[in-house]
Image (cartoon, rainbow, N blue to C red; front, side, top):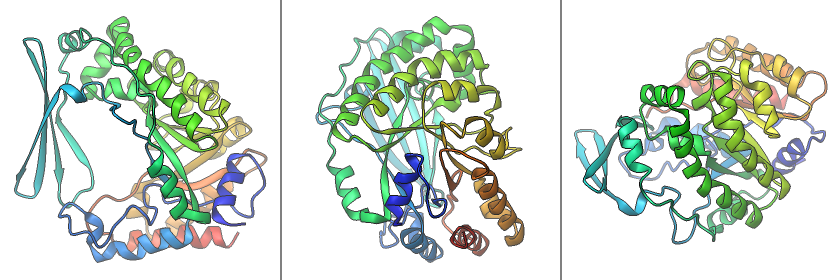
Length: 377
């Protein structure tokens, strides 16, 4: 059974020779050790063995989005002015949107040695800014997805893995316009107003999801954003309002057209697992173990494994910090719990990956341990 067959058989609920193992963002294709971009952390030689291990030995799931010709997912893109500047080892980006007599702005920062972006200033600072945004005419969704990059990636991967179509849900697009504190206050106290913002994005996301799913049937999808409404940020009743109500149509159309919808939600799951399952999704990640999460993988497998392929549940911090013998025990536990009894399938996977310029020898050893333990199966 080759790696692509193993993944697709797992998604379909069939029997496989061993559980797939995936390093999540690290796939051996998107990391370029030869690039001289000063913000490319993968140019450090410590990353090369992991890049090669991911390329040669993992069941590769490569994330890709499908842009639309002559259209941006962000409805503010056409009226946004962007400027970028450097200060020391950091790159800053400011985006400015003018709405009549009102100016909205956001600022983000990226450091050379850290592969992440910090939002220093959110675009929307409160309900007044949101009201101003909602005065804009609703944007029209894109109609013609550009699938060339996805098809090209699938050709490069061959039988070593699959492409996973990556998309935010309407909640993600809405909540990410605020800082977390402002978002939770508005979502809790001004629900009708916040629904108007989500509906604005849903009017774009829903038809575009259908267009992509029709052009690329049978693919795995990752829908990210539900964690914004998970405990402790919002109560389960609002997870049902802000996630189930808007993500279920996405799941339905993806799977009606032969695809496989996977919900991405970090953190606590116990109180919302029934709601996640009610969307009809057939995948869930990363199912973080306690204390980051609040359920064991065995708990999820026993209650939801007949419907849902489980992706997880190794914590990224454990890869970087746990001594080899303790990390090996975590891997064995994840495999045992993820494959216990009957169920649709399990993919061994971390919750994220290291994002510093230098990959430690311990992290490299722990990545090898994931492969070694699964290979012995």
